[in-house]
Image (cartoon, rainbow, N blue to C red; front, side):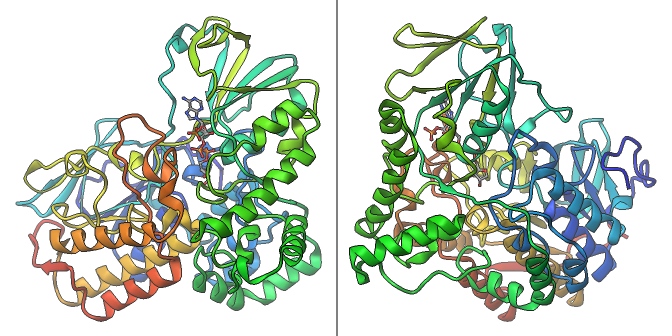
Length: 554
Ligand code: NA7
């Protein structure tokens, strides 16, 4: 199959209500389509804004774009066959390889015939008398379905800060999350990059290699651990093929869905020498597993500080210029309390003559001029290209962009004016027959995404199967279930250091005006999975299941 689709699928023009419409053809939407169409025999269509499958990875093509999860765990595990027949080439999958993988899965399961590409959904309205969701697309098409499933990803709405003057900038500018497919030529250019999160940390070394000069505008210094990416050996590939069941078991039983367990020991239980030796080994091994050496890193500030100090010392050791080293190591939050990046030569890139670092916490960006960036002090940085590595309107942004209206015309934007509220991250009271895959209130961004996606998709599939077995067509959670779950989400978050970082996107703090509410469920994926399974086994308490308007979808 081609990686991009220009032609519409065959069923275009067919306006009969679907049993379900899925929005998004990334990891979630593809698997949800397979489950509903091929397991439940439903009439399903996927609407996808991009010209191919991939979801977030369809757009995310910036220099150095690579997943931080290890490749053998960043994939579906529902089918041993599909798992075994795909061979990853590197320890961490690059963006192009992830797209190739998802295209392979799409071809294997014959999914593309039910995906309408290049179709952005602009509005979704619940029609109570008909018992249908009515959708409008950017092309003005009207579609309807009994069930609406959002598979729009958590980090897919670009956050471009409103810095005055951008429209008059005479150079080129890009956001990392919507990168031109043809790439960007940096050779001979003076590049300015705003943002030093996971994305910015991946992009810096790659842009620095090519550009004439790179200026990195840092607002918040960040920890990072070496990724130690490398080609996978044939022994490791064989081990992966032979250990599908074990990899699946481990990823499903850990807190974060990664293929390694968190050690059950406290930082305080080891001597300083032992601690140092453990962290040195973890540093050499690299990757997100660095934080998994102790159970209390995100629970206890005095435990955390020992890891944080270790990483700060490493940064100071890697960066030769003492002024840059001090700026990079001046980190104001606990290790791992913001999403911990991993890198391939980030700190070392600051040893290059063509890479400068500017502290925009001390001297904030005042405006963009036609020729560069001006700081409050009046200092000007002349630039040909600006790269916004400024993150996303996370978790709620992609849902808000759908302009969802539920019962009585209630807008989701109004229902969530004080922050998102859901039951299990799956449903919202007042929005019947709507399911949000990896919605706020579920582990989502705190988990290796394919693991939590498979769990949500399978739970939704089982739920719709159950509804059908009962001869029912309508399901809606209650305000009470939602309030109880919301309290639980805040309770477990407050047991950790995660909500203590005032500028974290987990709290919505990176988007001006966004309510400050801790959004993902921090109680761990394994516990969440068990809880959802218990809800299903008990007959779905917290959800009301009823007859809908039977005629409409027939
Ligand atoms: P992040 O983690 O939200 O990082 C965005 C970066 O951009 C961060 O350093 C921000 O500083 C910075 N930023 C945002 N707005 C501004 C303005 N106006 N001025 C200066 N600096 C700014 O996004 P990423 O894309 O790196 O990563 C998102 C997730 O994708 C990641 O966690 C993985 O799960 C994959 P701040 O820290 O807010 O001071």
